Image (cartoon, rainbow, N blue to C red; front, side):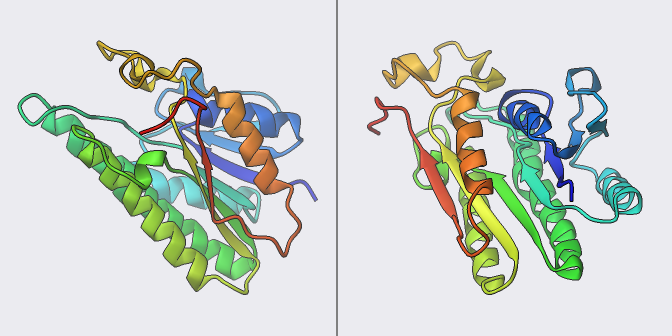
Length: 231
């Protein structure tokens, strides 16, 4: 049976790369993000653009998937924002928007899909977290908090779902070259002295490793760091 996967944040970076990889693997994909023109689109990919932070959009997305396909096998929570900065200059509106997307919207969608997974008796949630879900740094407290929250939810759900055919996995990348840092005055690879950051292909490899495990194996957390990462 062809596997069906929903990928959020699929217009760029890790989400887009995962979509490309799973397209090649033969999955039926539903991809979503706000930028419709950036979403992968072909016969195996259904584009469903919108703002994940709105309840109405989430409800329409869920209803569409289960009315059309009858089931969902994977949810990839890749949508997220990154807003950092010192107390004096951090953009409070962007910071709160980040928390709404990274925490509120992601949690809501996760529980909605898990209710469906409970009904069908199987499914797998793959959350794109961060190494900053395990530690904090000055000026990045709000972002780290959003990832700590995702880690806490993932572990609690893993425990609640132990013994079932429903899985929850967290991938915790270090610095990955994506659009998230395009507007930074100093790129983290310079400030952190990381000469060879990760690329999205490294994260895709981790995803495929998780997906190819036998049914009795669980991988709750998988941290991936560039070799120069030492803080």
